[in-house]
Length: 301
Image (cartoon, rainbow, N blue to C red; front, side):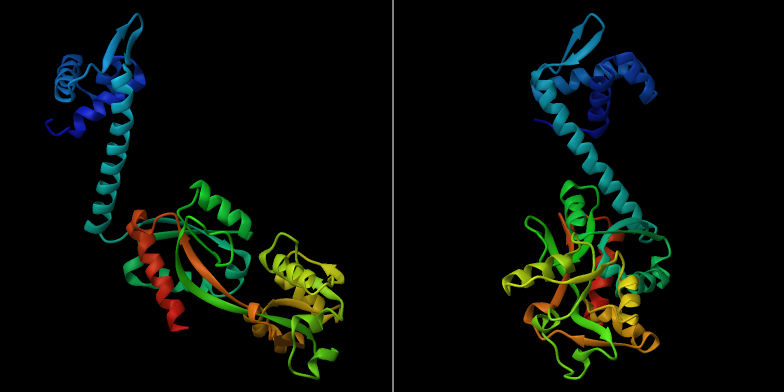
C-alpha cells in the first residue's frame, strides 16, 4: 500500500464530519471535484470502499470508520510535530498548566517557578499553577485534564511516570511556653497528649496524622480546625494547641510569631514530593524544560 498523504486524510475526515463533500470542499477552499478525486485515490490506496452515498449526503462505511479513527490520530500527531518543531525553531515557548498540592505551593514551588520565569531563555513560556488537594490533583492528572502535577509521592500514583522533586519534614509547631519545648525532641505520640490545631480532613497531612493516631490506638483532640497553614500558625501563636505541619512552612515565621518548630522523630514524618505525568515524552518542549529545571533546583537544595 502506498503512503497515505496528510492532505487527503484531512479531506477525508472533513467529509466524514460534515457528511457533505461540497461543504468539506468549501471549508478546505478547493473545488468538490478535487475532493472527489482524492477520495477515489484514497479508496484505491487502501483497497476498500470508504464512503457511501445517502439521500442527504455521504457517510463512512465500516472500513471508513476504521480509517477515520486512524486518520484523526495521524493528524493529531502531525499537529504535535508541527507545534513542537515551531517551538524549537523560534526558541522554546508555550503555556504549561501545572497542578500542585497545598504543601508544595506553601513551600518552595513558587520560588522555583519564579526562578524559571526569570531565565532569559524562558521569556516566551507561560505557566499556570493550580493549587488543589492531593486527591483532586491525582484525579485531574488521571483524567488527562492536566499534563503535569506535583504531589506527595505516597499518593496513588499507579500508572503515572514520576520524577523526584523536593522533600519536607513534618514538625510539631508550638508556642514557646508549651511543655514540648523543654525536651527539644518530639514524636507524634507525644503530641497526642495535647490539643491540636488541625487542617481539613481531606488534606494529605491530616489524613496521614489521623491514620498514625489510629495505629497508636489514640485519637487527636482538636481544639480548632482551620483551612490554611497561616491560620494554623496564628492559632499556635495564641497558644491554642499543637500544629503538626511541615517545618519548611513554619520556620520562616518562627521568630516573628514567637513559636517553636520541633521536627518529629518519626520515620514517616519526612515526606518526598514527585513531579508526575502520564507520559513525560509526550509533554510539550516548554513543559519538559520546566520539569528539568525543577529537578535541577531540587538537587541544588
